[in-house]
Length: 495
Length: 131
Image 1 (tube, rainbow over the protein chains, first blue to last red):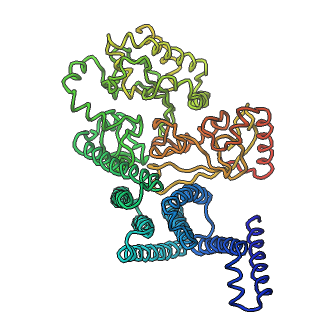
Image 2 (image 1 turned 135 degrees about the vertical axis):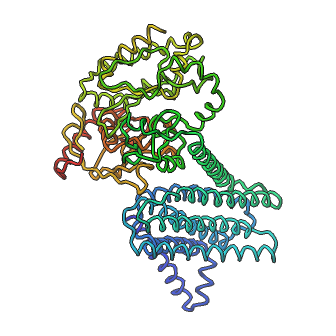
Image 3 (image 1 turned 180 degrees about the vertical axis):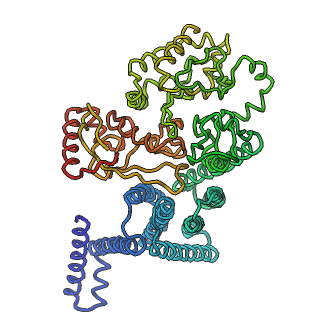
């Protein structure tokens, strides 16, 4: 509404200015001269040009995107503010070349950047949207073609201008458009990957890998471009302050891409080489449903060091995103390092520890605490810290319909008190299992008391090493109300 | 989803949509209330902001530990449970709706009244129970 009013106002003003000039001078040429000589008229015309740019943007948006989603709008506004700030910073570097043409070129750059971001968001959205129409494909393809052509034209223009006239502000435009061109390339690659994925009936397992590599390569090119740009700018002008933020962001995302690839490769390699295949007995002893795909596990299953079993293919897809156990969030990379480093140290303790996959059955008494199989201690550096990490998480094993209480310890102890939400979650489930909030509070209280005393204890006994383990064990909530309090009390006595 | 008993959202029936990505359960679904909501952890457009619906990589608020994030173990039931508990106990520290967070923290009475209005609206508009 306000936009429409402003647009109308600017049109009326322009009409008034032009009308006034023509009324005064009666002829075309003198009126043009009159307008260009008069500063207020020029101001009005500049505003009009700006309004035209916005209208143009709206038109292009309508043609290529239709209605923008709320998140796209939010992204766009957030990024535009940064871009505007950086453009203003760039003006300070090139204050000598400052002219309307120069401003117009920066505006155009900003304008095109907006559409690059929108294209990026739109293609990312492909993965999540249920139906992709033909119109969508048509729009994305023409948009990418259009933007790609513009970018390459500008790069070409900037290159020739730099060759003939030496390094001017065109250098900045050249680099900016080159960066935009890499964005277009990566969007296109992602679009192709998404399209292939959508065409096939089954989920495409290797897509995540290709996505990672796309990010890696594009990240590398961008980092290279930015570094070259900054180096050249320092050499001929001054330090390009306006390029710092994007450069930092690019480097960070490149580092993340490299990291992701290395980590996921390592996790998958570990899975293939180190982790044992689950034996049929192990599968039979627990309910053999893979928690990732919720289907039965018969063959091709792997057991992680934390004794959780999944399908190999499900694990592979998960490791491409995260290198933790889906159930207990144990860091598999850290765990395998530990396995390799300290096998002899673990061996002598094994006999006194019952097997970890002997999970207590509902109603069955808990095993005595000392030496209870918590695995080895991964956080030896935290051993003497007074802040024993601990957190109570409620895990729900959907197939069995029994809420399981898992005690994991990988965040500072005080978080426990802070995480009201989890507490509530626990309470809300506990209602249906006759597990009163008082039981819970008592357990937590005891748990707390024992953690307070843990520092003295940790140096003496293995039991506290167990507390330090990233993954403690899983208890059945139905037996928790009786046994866990006893268990916690035992722990307190030990402490 | 019905508002939890004993809270200011008690009695309300709030329709919501859960949108699952194609690679679910490897990436979290999104949940969005399709009715008007006024709550510190719900964006004004209805999107729900809770840590278990966030993928471990991105951290929009910059404070969540990875232990609270999405993992394939989470089920739809648990998401709903978390959202119910979120309705009962808003987390004002990570406000998705800043106005609501502020009101919840400073002017609880006003917030409760506002929530009651939302409840009434939800009953008047849509009676389908999605939870």
